[in-house]
Each structure stands twice: as C-alpha cells, then as structure tokens.
Length: 243
Image (tube, rainbow, N blue to C red):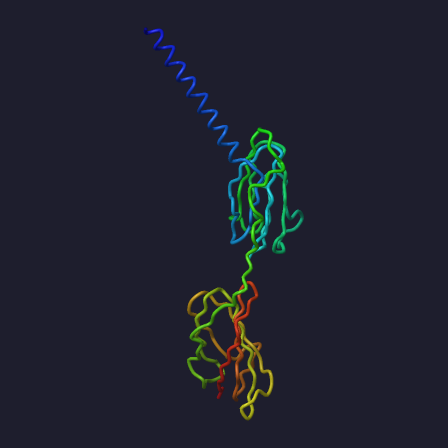
C-alpha cells in the first residue's frame, strides 16, 4: 500500500510538472503573433510584444507627435539610420521580421521614454497572420479655445501693459499691431509672440521691443492662437492707445 501510494504521488507530481510546462508553452504561443504597433502620444500602443520565429512587427506613426524613431539598443535595427532628428509623416510605417530568438529593446533617439521590447521565442511562427487592425491616424483638427481675453489697461505708456487670457491647450499666441487713423487701420506697426500654457496666462503686451517701436498713438492688435498641430483659432482684436 505504501509503495502504491508513493508511486501514485510521483505520477501526480510528474503530471503536474508536465501540465504546468504545457500551460506555459501554450500561454507563450498564444501571446505570440505578428503585431501592429502605433506610435503616438509619446508611447507605443504595445510596450511589450511576444513573437515566434519568422514573425514581424509593423510600427505606425499615428501622431499627433511624429518625431520618434524605432532604434534598437544593441541590435542595429533603426528606422532612422543616419538621422539624428527623426520626423515621420502621419501614417508612415516601419516593419521588422525577427528570425532569431531573444529579447530586443528599442527606444526613440530623441525621447528615451518612447520605448518597448520584443521577445522572440524559438518556436516557428506564422509570418502571414495579422491579429491587429491597422491603427488609425490621430488627426487634431480642433483649434485652441481662447477665453477671457482682456487688457489690464487700454491706455498705457511705451512699457506696455498686461494681456490676460485663458486657453485650453498649449499654443503659440501672436499679436500683430496696426496703427489707427480716423478709426481705420493705417499700417502695420509690429508684432509680438508668446508661448501659452493650458489655463490662464499673463504676458507683457505692446511694450517697446525689437519688433514694435511703441510710438504714441492709437492702435489695433489682431491676436491669434495656434496649437502644436497648427490649428488656428479665430482672430480676436483689441484697440489701445499709447501715450
């Protein structure tokens, strides 16, 4: 009875080991396939990828940020070989087939946080099966929204005044100054430009500078906001007087 019990225990233990190994093998195989990876918003859509031999990864630059490379840490693989400042058009692709097992690590040349790894098993894979849909391109067609645009004073000296405004996304703000005569625009007088962060901003407006001489007189400013995708909000105007 004792001998039979020990034999049965050994059989169950051996069976458990075999089943466990089979489960791990199945899990690894189930997670391995050709993959489509989108690069956008400063990250990979799949930071860790499992492949079998002969399978591939296709990277898609979907934006809105496209200044990224797929550069191997020690494999020699590089989507932008010989280019220090990568910048891909939206929808551009880069495909690599992996024919040797191992772990391949990648990161962007400009942004080390844009990275991921590809783990390749020694099992033969299927180079034709695609499990992912083609990633969609991220188009940003919405212009920034400017709110509460106002001058601290509409009459001020050559040092200028404060322009206050709120904005809903990182943008560039520029103002073109025009001299006024008899209530109408008479001519271009200069310009200013500022970087604006999300939320409320206060910038020095219409002060004497390299691009604006700020002579006494009446003026009108045409103010525009342009986001990082080059969407421009509608123009806003403000009139002021320099004494």
